[in-house]
Every structure is written in C-alpha cells, then in structure tokens.
Image 1 (cartoon, rainbow, N blue to C red):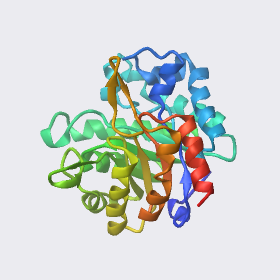
Image 2: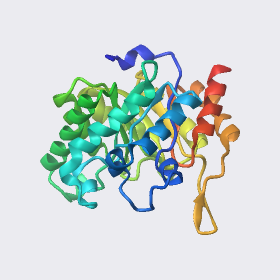
Image 3: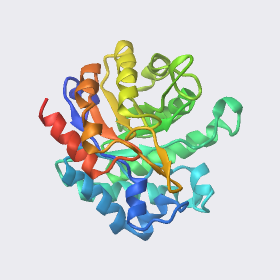
Image 4: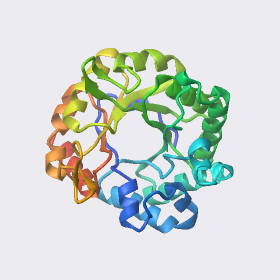
Length: 291
C-alpha cells in the first residue's frame, strides 16, 4: 500500500524483533547465508514473520538484511540478488496479510566508503537492484539498517529514491564513548539528519549496538535535530558470554519497561534487535497499548 511516513507522526507503532536468531532456532546453520533460505526454506522464514505478526507487530521487516552484492558474493550468490530480495519481501507480505506493513530491510555492505574499499557506483548499483526487487515484491517502505557511515546510508537512500517510490527510513547503529553518542565512524544523530534529510529520507533512527536505556538518549538527540518520525530497535541489553555463546540479559518485561521513556524521548516506531524474540515484541505491544 502507498504510505507516507509523516502520517505516523504523533503515533507509536510496534515493529518486530530479531530475525537471525529466530532462523537459527529453526535450523539455519551458523555462518550460512540467511537470504538463501528465502529460496531454500521459505516456510521457516515465513514462520518467523508470522510469529511477529501474532505477537502484535504492526510493521514487520524482511529476511533481506544481507541482500547486497558484497555480502552475497561471500556465499557465491551475488547473481541472485534480485531473486532473493524479491522473495524475502514476498514471504513477509504473505505473513503480513492486509493489516500489517512490510518494510524491506537493507543492511550494510561491509565496505567503508571513506577508506575507498570499493567504488561508490558499484555499491549504488547493488542498492538500486535490491530496491527494485523490494518494490516488485510488494514492500511498503525500505529501512536502511545497522549502518555506521552516513555516506553509505546516503548512497543507499539515493539508490532507493531514484529507482522506486518507496519511503526510506535511515537507522544507524550508535554507541556511547568518550566523545558522546556517535556511530563507529563518529557520526552523531544530528550529523545523520544533516547528511540525509535532503535525500528524501522520511524517518530516522537507531538499531543494534546497545540496549534500550542508551537508545533513549539517542532518540532524544534525534528529536532535537528533526521533527521526522523516529525508529528504534535496541538490543536486549549488552550480551554476556555464557557457555561459549552470547546471552542478552533483558527479558521481555525488562525490555518493554523502557517503552514509556522511548516514547517520551520521541520514538514513533519501536521494536527490537539482537536478543529480542516474539515474546519481547508481545511485551512491547502490551506496553504501547498501556500508554
């Protein structure tokens, strides 16, 4: 459906949670390319999407985080970009039905533009190919997720805007350091807004990296820089290693306890990233309904 992100200003919508760990629970081998399952095991991918719909998500994402040429090339699947990207959206579209929105996930390429690790036009072509496939699959919008370099987000936003009519959300990953709130490449929320607001980006946000407590502050910084809708998908706290694996400490209720503070800071779209599950999203749904 045709949507305008500005229509959601003043509202609070529940998005989804982590996908990778949910796929692993359904048998995805560690290190295997998740996007290949859009063709090889679509039933498992759809089961994840349906679990979030049943938990109360009003927006679900897609199993397309790594649907770009550099990432797929590591798995010998660069030539299948359009196929896997379109299939990922179509799977979420089936699970969503007519009442839930589908926002296509567009993740980072792993290449740093400022280090000239790859040509910008090559990444643009990759993002544009994915964007066209997202539109063909029936996406309602595109979320640029987990990027740390505004230049990469800008390239992706331009590619989406110049090849489709899909709205764009730019969500970067932030941390707290000696210099304050910033991405790994040193960009603050205000820097992100300044770099992207002229490129048709309709909403800004933050995901991954840290837990919800830190992202209350990040959303506050964003709100001081823009009146646009704001997106937040925090991790379930900072992971600790137990028995050789990462364990995220915040359970569903503890995670959802930050919903009022996130909303007060200015959040419009609230979900979860690493360590979150359908149970976390159900708790977020309950917290939002109680506002």
